[in-house]
Length: 296
Image (cartoon, rainbow, N blue to C red; front, side, top):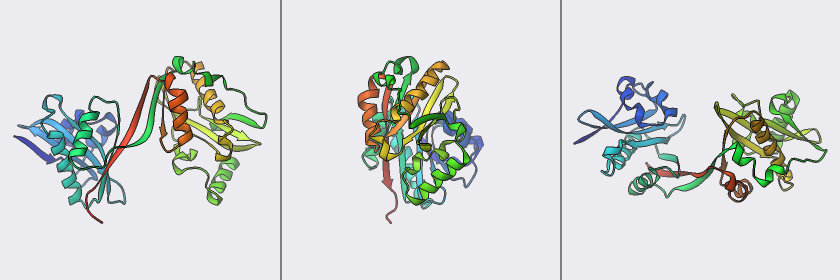
């Protein structure tokens, strides 16, 4: 007989660390009674065999499900679906009205996870992001890597050299006529940005584009936030900015690179699928599924 219960302290949660992603383990082992982190554990005669982990979002009645994991020897027995059912019940008791789960396709457990979501009446998974991985020696062979020239009116500069007046001007423009999507405002991605190849693009002396990167491992750079002012996008001025960032990474002999592109950004998503994909080592899809827990 399997047992399901909510974990309420770091001592018991410590045993369940292997049952979630490394990113969430520090949160799990800091668990306290009344925490917004909801951890539902499955056990077999006190032996940990599974975990469903979610968090109630601040100042919200919504929850984000981080992971659902079952020990391999116990899979295909309905434990994953039961974990999600118990998690939903606990979220409802905390007055959550909805829950969302975001995951990446192409994993060994993807099919099983999607079956669980279907069984529990979550919405059909919807594409969210294209998740790209490559190596520098592969990506530099792409034909578009030769597009390095830009007109004299443009100039590429290290992002760390953006001036205070330029920052204020971007903020002012965003207040008057917002042309930058909220998720792509560069100032929201500056924490621990990679100075090696985080770049900006000026047009006639005005900042109109950027590529903010982060070193997520000693040998890996993530291309986190890239954008170009909409009226200039059709002129393909973003590609030389991307190429310059990749060249700087190659020169520093940093082997791996990654990025994620929203499927709603049609031009970038098409660029990834048609022109970048042959030079990637992996192309996966981030998907999301939602469930309404309490009728409004």
